[in-house]
Length: 454
Image (cartoon, rainbow, N blue to C red):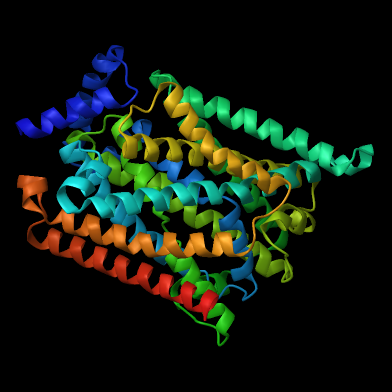
């Protein structure tokens, strides 16, 4: 398709991929063609493993302060709510798979597609929601990260005034996240790959820390099985609200913007289709289900029910680990998730504004727009009025099912996907799954709004 090749060429120019990567890119496509033709699915998986990457960013983005807080709240009901996270993640990732499918076969930038194929208002509304979310959700990352560092090093023992230690720690986070974020936009592919590898180790390091906690506290295997597969809903209105909130926020509106643009930055095309599904499963679904599930089990085992916000997560889990090594690993894992989320929120701000105002995500304009997210450093010193995150969450949750609907429509538009449009029994199954995902997210959104405003 000549038009698709033109889109790919435009995208490659738009994103920070240097010409010296062309040879490696062609070699990668050739290798994937060989892997895709292997008859054994296990041999294909083994071949895909060394190419995975973009979905790690989604895991790092979702495994932050909000995930920790939600898992702790769900843990108040024992093992009963273990089923909520995997159910929500499955259908949310199904929609991300559709988004990735469209990117692989068209090479078009989603914001431009929304503007031209759907309606400019939808594109603008989507972009503004993602931008707001990326700024507001920086606040808990700085708050939790600063608290964890203070806890790890017991800074109060040094007799240092609290505000001075906060300035030093938060300032360090600001410098570190800004340096890495700006390196991501230099045009050198090695920084992108290296950053994604670091995120991979941080994600699994966090999971390992939680495994240590669960080993220490023990696990009820019968209750775990029932928690995952019996879909029990406790007779408590707060439990219902937690379920709706977890379902509605299983895939945030930020991920629907970040994922396709990272795929484009990595130059994923139709040869990457199989890799895309493998990457979403291994790099996002598994860790984003395992980590909060382990955290929920640890909280349920400990009986902790009075955590006063996500900034107390590290301190609340201290008695669970027992060994000093386990406490340090747990703290480093939480800290790594906070820092990675800070970086990703900055990148998202840059991507959104570069698309909305039509400049390349590089140079001083890109750096300036990514820095908007750094307003969140205020979270280390104070929190915004309660209505700011509440209203922002409401807007974001409303936008998520709307975004899913938009991509559902595009998935079935022949004037967009051409010969690759949904068809046959696979197409029907995919459409059914996306409709269920839309319903689940809409239900979660309705529950959140009713719980907060009525």
